[in-house]
Image (tube, rainbow, N blue to C red; front, side, top):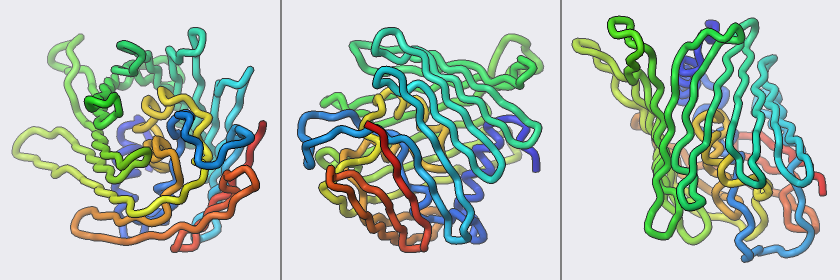
Length: 299
């Protein structure tokens, strides 16, 4: 089935995640994070700081996906995901050291969807990321609005994205058709639980129940998260655009080793083993289902 708009792709990806025939069903390939927190001065392995250059993920069937990161003067400026012949490009715009815009271009076959996000801050914290989604021919398909909430300590605890389409009966008015919500709890510098909910808004008599994925992270290593060089705003703003890799996990300082996952009455425990270089960065990770990830860095 062709992907006509990104929100449908998100729905399908979530359903696929939980399908018993999915190549990613409840496994660690889904949980390798994309964007962690920046250095807080409590580095468990002080030394050379490296920037993630490339990750190569191989699933248990031998199929690969590759993500490449590009930098300019020490800043992440773009990233590209290639997976099963499809691509996803991320482009960042800065004002000084602050990310102000994020553009996500997805290509699947002949379908191209471009999402534009403007990032808004309050007292240095990202509070909103909103914009529109267009075809390559600049035909607007949908609008998206993401809000970020923080606890009293200034740590993010909720991300909510609303996808809105124009009301055909009231031109110029937009109604929410789909939502994605991430609720996060931390234990010290690492995520302890993550509740991810997707909901399709329907009108009676049609009722579509929400899909809820709850992951509890039971143990971490004391080594460096390979994505720690990425700015937090990119981590947060791209969270619901990178559901296949669950980018939010990058907010942890360290690398999780075990996790328990529950969804739609099904549960599974996973274990991940890492190898590390002399600077405390993972060079590879192997999940208990046989999938692997290889990490490459640049200084």
